[in-house]
Image (cartoon, rainbow, N blue to C red; front, side, top):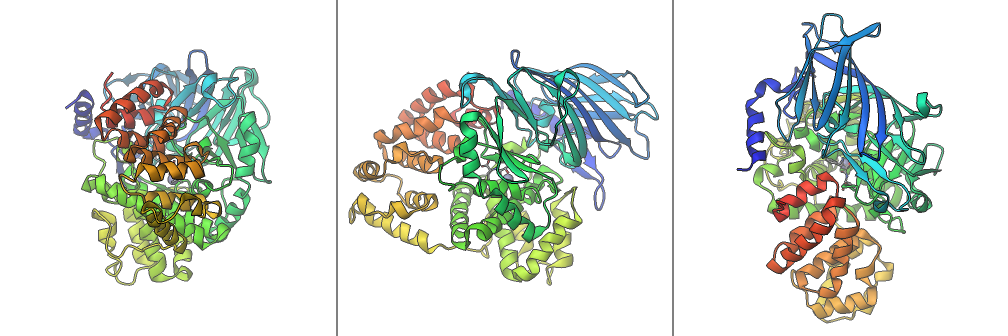
Amino acid sequence: MNKLHLLRGGILAAIALLASCTHGDGPVTDIHSFSDPTSVRTTHADIRWDLDFEKEVLRGSVTWTVARGANDQAQLVLDTKLLVIETVRVGTAGGMRTAAHTHTGGSEVFGIPLTVALEPGDDRVEIRYHTGEGGACVQWLNAGQTADRTHPFMFSQAQSINARAMIPCQDSPGVRFTFDAEVTAPGGIRPVMAAENLEERGANGAWRFRMPQPIPSYLLAIAAGAIEFQPMGPRTGVWAEPSVVAKAAWEFADTERMIEAAEKLYGPYQWGRYDIIILPPSFPFGGMENPRLTFATPTILAGDRSLTALVAHELAHSWSGNLVTNATWSDFWLNEGFTVYFERRIMEAVYGPARAEMEAVLGRDDLMTDMEELPEGDTVLHVDLKGRDPDDAFSNVPYEKGYLFLRLLDETYGRERFDPFLKAWFDGNAFRSRTTADFVAHLKKHLLDDEGAAIRLDEWLYRPGLPENAPQAESDAFERCEALAKQFLAGEMTADAIPGKEWITHQWLHFLRAFPDAAPVARLTELDQVWHLTSTGNSEILMQWGLAAIRSGYHAGMPAVESLLLKQGRRKFLKPLYQELARTAAGKARALELYRKARDSYHQIAVNTIDEILGWDQ
Ligand code: BES
Ligand code: ZN
């Protein structure tokens, strides 16, 4: 057992430190936070940040407004991780004084609780602090790691439990707060937050932001760099570096149509504007649904609008996730499964059912691949995360098994019943955090007629694997791709007879996924000569091709792998490629060589995953 595991064990024993929040039927415990929101709850944050790009430090203060429970509990416990606490003061709007506090204990994974003593009547707590070394929330990039290479860049990624490495907070999705923020940054650097951007500037030229809707801590987000804004519609636009912004605005031109489709399905968009920021390539995710401002990887800029399901997905979170939030990380499928379902409904409305079905088939394949490798417990929708960073259990299960469950409800009860049912869930629980049990209660009350026996409710939510009644998406176009793949691999047709010019990205992906573990190198060579897959600008095809190249020992395809590993840091691409390389001794040596070069440029979230895959210990 390594040090980390011992520490994780230690945290489990410290049951007294569990967070809980008042809820439908009583308090819900969040095992991933030290805070105790039932006694003292943070409701509003006043944030002052200065971005020090030279030292790569975020420095400033937060003043929390707190609501005290009936028992007037005399302490506020906040989560922190790798933060340096400078001063702590408490009091009221009328006056503040230095506070007694402790900042010790905790663990490497969950950080250190900051406990502040309160007197009766105190409703403000101000903490001055700065970020320390490491930490999995904020990544600082030098100019060379950006698109235009002129200025440095920084961005945060708070989900799941990283907000505490940016700000002392009750870092639990069951706690919501509004905020005001003032941010200073060096000349040439434009900070943006997932919030309302106020036009007027504050003291010292500070940029001002305001979030009037209550959000959980994992949706607090900031990015800053030499970025520009380009509007797409009255309520939509993109932020990106100058060389990227026009390309991005073109790629996402359908955003307003997506919002309209979403509103028609499940009610008005509640957050005012919907903008997208394209981050530098080290962003570890495809997208992150930060409210009013989706954070996105540049790897979805394919030049043909083929990867914009990601926008539909992050937009859908404006309902499933941001409006109705998973109360704990074990309920994560309530965020992601609902969002994938909603995403595909948006895609169906905007681009037609054929494309949405292709996406569902690809999603189910991803799910089956994961299910084969995951420990049984991690294939359960309501997942047990005791003692673990929620990020360690990340997989396609909450996404695609969750999707299939909602699709089963849709197919079983019909959309005329299911759509109003889902809309009522969003309406009735807006700006609230909800558990799996809450959803079950809603289901039993408003949709099921037999306690869920027919749909096997219990099996879907609480048992491993994929229930037999899982819906099966089907695509005729995909069946043709599969047939062609077989013929091509068998040498019954040449590469130039493949109708690739008519194919959309999804068809290429399905075609390549039909390749066996060791497809003949001669076939890959011919395919590459005709279709130039090794140099494609489409990141999804590039990854699928890179995997085929590794599996088949097609060395001429290795530049595809290298470009994905060295030039971008999206974990979804890194993980399978490193895993595939690590299957052979020679591949593993190559993987380590590439990782040694690239590791410093990846975000900590990706580093954690790849360290584990490669057994990195240096
Ligand atoms: N909220 C997630 C990203 C996330 C999940 C970050 C868990 C940290 C912890 C986001 O909405 C997401 O699911 N992104 C996907 C894209 C989507 C199209 C499936 C991604 O980044 O791949
Ligand atoms: Zn999502």
